[in-house]
Amino acid sequence: NKNATNMKTFEIPAARGFMLHENSEEARRIFTEDVAAAYFSDLKDLYGKIDFFLSNEDKRRSLAEIGYVTALEEENTYKERVAAALATITNKL
Image (cartoon, rainbow, N blue to C red):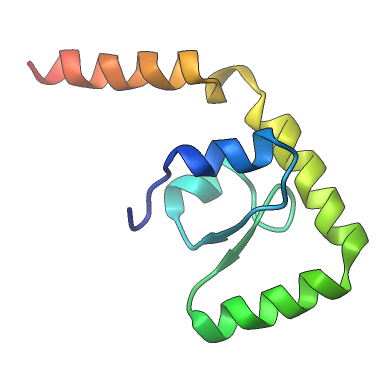
């Protein structure tokens, strides 16, 4: 799912979890970097961000809380995501 989202992209923040997501243009459009989620580009970047966020609980909690609010916004619910997918499929038939 390069540059895409999957269900975990929404379920992690919806459960009030901190999300450290592989770089994804689609995920960044929904969950703003360093506001609602954190992103990594390679293993070195991942390890560095793991160390950073394990040492910065306040920042981690802040991102998790804003991610939670973002995940519950109307356009991010399962109902809206399924409706958008069906509209895409219907338009291609």
